[in-house]
Image (cartoon, rainbow, N blue to C red; front, side, top):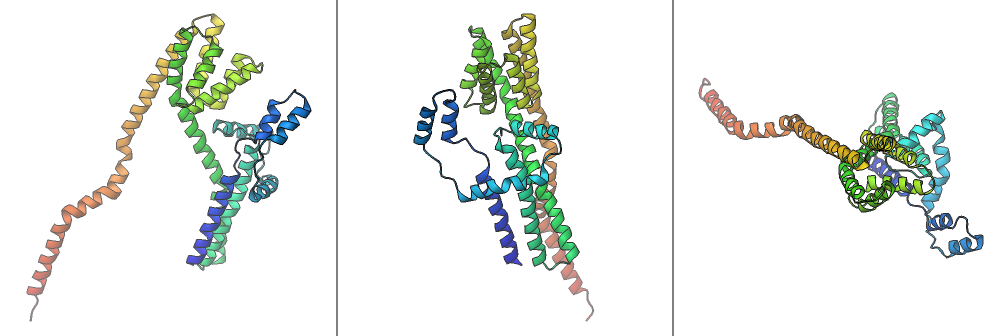
Length: 320
């Protein structure tokens, strides 16, 4: 039985390592040069591509890339609207590559099948009945099938929380930059560059908005896309404030300062709310772990003396 459990754990760990190794990463240098050389002479681009260092492709990655189209078929979204929602969730979690959707859908099938196989091996090694084996395996497979969704939800929430916490600091710097005389586009670029090490998630979204503006996308459209990628209400409110300030000709610096003060108050209130919840959250570990230990330390010696006293009394009072 122990050998079957160990084998199941090894299979599950192998599946996890393969998924981690194959998750979409940065594009290859050749693709980067091809994109930068778009619109130039083909011979120069091909020469640079030939000179670019080629990354070694692992055999496992090639195998998974061939398996991915088949693994994602059973879980393909039924409509384009569902596919768009999935892309938006992945974008809000920080994954924007073209292969992110394919790998995510394939991971649901692979993880579900892997957990199902491990559950079958473990339950068969335990000697359970056939109905119990298939019932437990089906339940475990369903859980494995839903694990990627849980991971995506946690990653999305974590990134949105980071964006929400970094927005007041970014707005303070934007106020200073705008009041120093820079325009809004230059301000967004400057703040995005300066905040890259402090709040990389929000800085990345700002730099994407700047890049879209440089490609000809209107400023407000680029900012609205940034708010949609972030998925945070505070960012949407900021974009609306900037749009109204530009529409009515009011000072953008004052609007940003008001928005920064409001967000700072909200951040402090969220911190106070979490601090107030700490007492309630500590009740469970106190009751389950700390109170029993204190009870044993305080009442243990008295209980031992009582047991010893009753034991002696019982022995002395027995008839001979």
